[in-house]
Amino acid sequence: MAAQASLRDRRMIGRLRLASQRLAGDRAGSVPELVRWMTAMQAQDLQAALWAVGVRVPGAGLADVRAAIDAGTVVRSWPMRGTLHLVAPEDLGWMLELTAERLTRSIAGRHRQLEITWADVEKARDIALEHIAADGPVSRADLFRVLDAAGQPTQGQRGIHLLGSLCRHGWLVLGPLAGNQQLVAAFDEWIPVSRRLGREEAMAQFLLRYLRSHGPATLRDFAWWTQLPLTEVHAAFENVRHELVELECGGTSYWLSPEVAALQDSGLPGARSVHLLPGFDEFVLGYTERSAVLAPEHSDLIVPGGNGVFKKTVVAAGKVVGTWALEGTGPRAAVVPELFDGAATLGPAAQAALTTAARRYTRFLAS
Image (cartoon, rainbow, N blue to C red; front, side):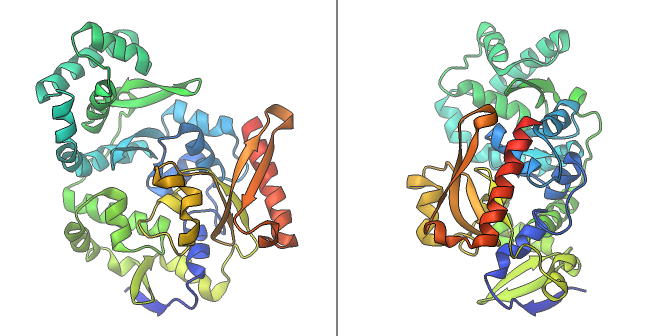
């Protein structure tokens, strides 16, 4: 049965999320294990996504994350919100079946502007699959050249919308890496085993896994994260609430796994932790309401001008305390933090943890 308790201190939300997101406490043993646990990880910025995985897997290097993508044990596609995410390959099919129709309706107006009809999508599908069957996975640029030559223009965002549609409907998927780009592959060839779930089961599993990997979180957070209807989310919640713990804070119900909730009594990790997280990381971006970990007055410093581009963040004890950048290249590369309230924000222990985190990042890039 679900348990209920009051959150003793709202500042603990961030530390509980560190544990849920495998940034503190129990850690993932491999790259595929971590991505499967996280359910989906924002990945429109590929380099940021590689580090979002690496920072959560002790000892993982850049080559390990790239190898998982090349092996197809982690895949990148548009499973929700019209945004690229990393997911486990066996999950992508049912995620797309759950979210694709609603997203297709939401961008119908843009497709009319781009003069993309369903017949165009089907024609682009046939052209792409025929080309890939003959030559194997193809770069985006080469695929667009093939489409252009066959009478499907790709200029002015038409190409990316066609590609997104073909991926969203499960015909194509981003496959192996070629440098800092990904080749486009046929879905059924790249993901030979992809589970199919009924809508009710898929909704329940999606919600449960999100709350376990991102909690404490609200049902509204999940509805925003997936862009699925809140009424349907509430219905799915009744099927999984017995597997979760409710924490009440300020009149709001947050939900999380029993294992992480129990850390309030047994010892919550992360009190002296400092993490250097990439832009677009799930710790910040995975929720519609972020004030528990990011002071509202600092929001513009993370997303300047509200332009949708999230900067890299310094997170100390579950709270965003600044941004950071990498200056220089190779052995001389150095992490340069910019703390919101100056160097006094971090005490000696946290400063030492920041130095350790910076070394971890540079080792990740080199391995």
